[in-house]
Image (cartoon, rainbow, N blue to C red; front, side, top):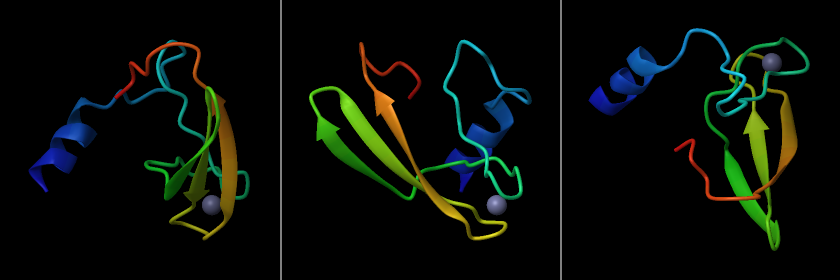
Length: 72
Ligand SMILES: [Zn+2]
């Protein structure tokens, strides 16, 4: 609980172009907070499953990891 509170309080109120790009729901434009699931695809590719809490829409994004993940 406190960890989530800390996460929320320290999160930038606006998207940081240099930071992690959290997707937004293509249906209702709500911001996704955490992926439902992730899948390792290939050498440097990962896909994430997102489900919108607001409208229930689900979608998948793919990410290519060029270097270390620094956004966690
Ligand atoms: Zn939505």
